[in-house]
Amino acid sequence: MLLVWALWAIIPTGNAQVYVEKQTRHRFAQLNLGLGHQFSIGGQTRYLNTDGGLTPLDFNSFHSPRLLIGGTHFWGHADFYIAIPLVNPDFTSANQEVTALTGVETVFKYYPWRIQHQRIAPYLGLSLAPFYYEQKNGNLDFGNGPELNRTTLPLLAGLTYNYNNHLVELGLMWNYNNDHTYYIAREVPVEVELPPIYFNISYRYMIETTLSAERGWESGRTKEVTQKMEAAKRLNAFYFGGGLSSAFWIKESNYNTNTRPYLERLSTSIMPDFTIGYYLHKPDMNIALSYRGYGSSTNGYGAVQQFKRRSLVLEATKVLFDYHGFVPFLGPAISYERLSFEESFEGQRTLDIVDNKWAYGLTFGWDIRPNRLQSWILRTNLRWFPDLQLAVADGQTVSFNTIEFNFIQMIIYPGRMFPRKKK
Image (cartoon, rainbow, N blue to C red):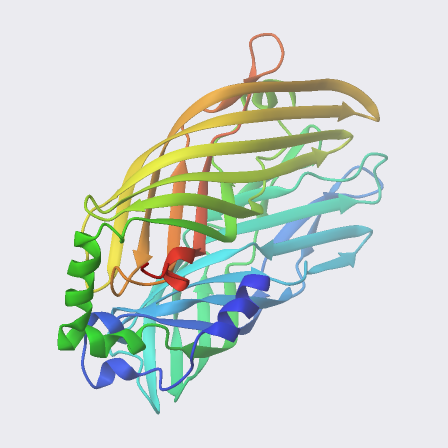
């Protein structure tokens, strides 16, 4: 939230449809911030009644307000944002407490007719959406069911109305992959149907962030200054950054597969992501040191497991190309990891393991960079560390395999904000 307020305070506002006049690198993307509301239709589960029989239970509609942070791209033809739920919707019926929600959803939408002032624009898209489900049965002694976590790619469609800097949207999400096996007791799996349809209504405010640099670019002044600073070797620069990141746990642990089959895979972790680095202008690459600390847990029917990861990563990324200020990069990463795993069963500690190790991975992402003189830019990072595991018992392991996704990170070059005066 601090990042959101900081962006709102320092970024100038103004007409957000500047790409209507012409399509240049400085009109490629616009930041937007807002709020939305999501509600579901449908869904069903079953539960064990007091006689031990199976009884069906239909879901109530789940409602969730959400914080939206993102931006329009490709001159109003694309929209990327994250939706952060602000509450955990649930309902209670027949001595069952049921929770079902979407986690931090990453949305990608395409507009055949671009977003434009006083016009309704239809869109199609998809999202990377974690779905969470939990069922607690008050009829059982250890009735707290596991939290089911599934990340899928639901389809999206809807309408966006634009008025000046304002975006109002009505949308539909189809969660076609909504049938999942769920243990309603330690040895009783059933098929649970998560809600297949979600409706969304939202409001966002568009903020122009790069137009102020266009005049210098078109007059040739930006190129002239860049060449002078490059000759003086003043474009190499230290930077620091921060943002909100998420980690998707992508592999099941064979320890649970063999020992606790009723436990679900881990839920998506949300954490701050801090970095400090050095930019090399001539090769157009970054060398950075980043820190992330996060964890996740799973529990069900008396078993409780906690996973924690503390990671310091050194990464070197090279810019691949520059498409109108959209600048993707790729490079290797090496990290020093502190992994820990704890387990309790029916109140008794069964495992407590900590290990320090090296890991190797890959970093990919992109900058929104209208020119190479900016004192700050917005960055997106994805990191993958394959085969990151922790040995636990009898040759079995628990998995720390994740894909980390830092959707918006603010990168600041202090030396460019406060340049040294020549003597």
